[in-house]
Length: 166
Image (cartoon, rainbow, N blue to C red):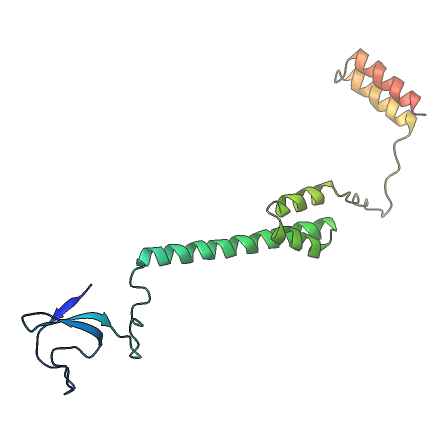
């Protein structure tokens, strides 16, 4: 946009009457007035002072907001993948690489951590509990039938499985 300036002097006593100090290019109108067509920046370079003149402020704010959300989302994805890998005994470096390099890397880490066999916690005595004996399992099955928690058909089917496993 060109701005008209009245004829007067440029303030520094130079030879260009009516031209402002920050004007790099101007046109003279027929009535003696001067119109500046290009302003200089702070360092005297033409156009240097108008770097963001056409970009609205809300666009710059929106761009920075999206950039911050992207960085925050990436940090969350990596930290979540690392935590899941550490909790399940997987390689933390591999989980980090998957979260960064693949769009579904966090999901893959989640699945791998849930499919990984975790050791059962040891009982208070320090030794794992022995599997129940066949007799104990049959007694428990009979108690379930007496309490009415299973039907006679279910009792007979499960009893046959227990005996076949022996």
